[in-house]
Length: 293
Ligand SMILES: Nc1nc2c(ncn2[C@@H]2O[C@H](COP(=O)(O)OP(=O)(O)OP(=O)(O)O)[C@@H](O)[C@H]2O)c(=O)[nH]1
Image (cartoon, rainbow, N blue to C red; front, side, top):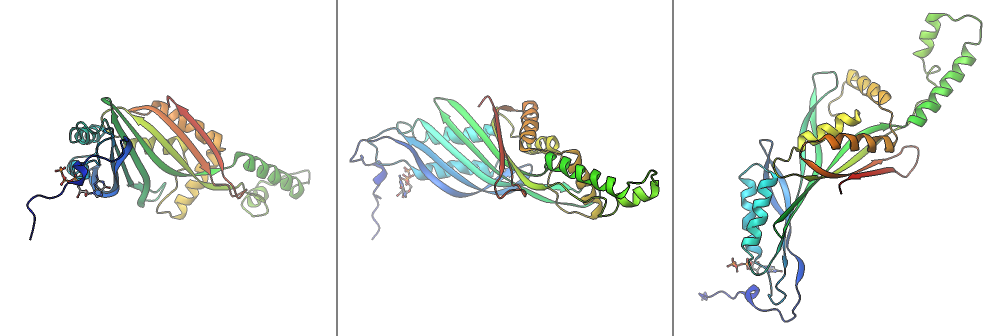
């Protein structure tokens, strides 16, 4: 037989009087709408439990408040609305509300020269909180790129010069022989090392649109050596040129990103961390920078 009154343990008093910083649910599956597409996200939703005598929060109310995120395009205003709903549904219990969204942002990227294109995924997380009517939202995105060591390039050039002196020690130079030599492996005796690198941008956002794609575009254009998707030889050659024209220590990459983010729309503060997964070493070269953080 079904009882008409369901026991509600959360409504009981706690045996210990103790407020809690964060209570909620992690890893909730949730579709989001971004740039006209639906994407698969994971949400962590929580509130503080400021009433130390209350046994528990109302998990279902947080869960149901997330529904709006699958119906309307993702924006900071929408996230704020969700957090306000968290607090409205926990009056007397909670003063702070938290939401974290994690997803992969997929972008179709054209090849450098050929008419090909392919997809790249950018891991994104958005952390938002509402406290004393103050709304904070931070977005973090990982951007892979290529970096070629400027020191290694200079050392390689020196070896090429020395090889040139050995191979062309005579008094006269024949243009065709030099040209042929430049195209041979005995001409380019040394190559600089390059590495796949990662930039993690953490930005504080003003209220409004997310401008996520614009943020990624801005960072990739500042670096000049975004990793590619579909690649034919013409694209690979253009990529080699881009790397040669954008030799970068990790410090250079961090400075480029810092300058670019200072100009980015809707960004009120940021932290940048770049990691060059060195092929010279078994460890990484890392640089970090921040502004209003
Ligand atoms: N507070 C809390 N609830 C939990 C936990 N684990 C599971 N739940 C369940 O989450 C469910 C939803 O809780 P509530 O939101 O309070 O559900 P409800 O009482 O039916 O909804 P309201 O009438 O809106 O309060 C309940 O069945 C709880 O038992 C937990 O660790 N803490």
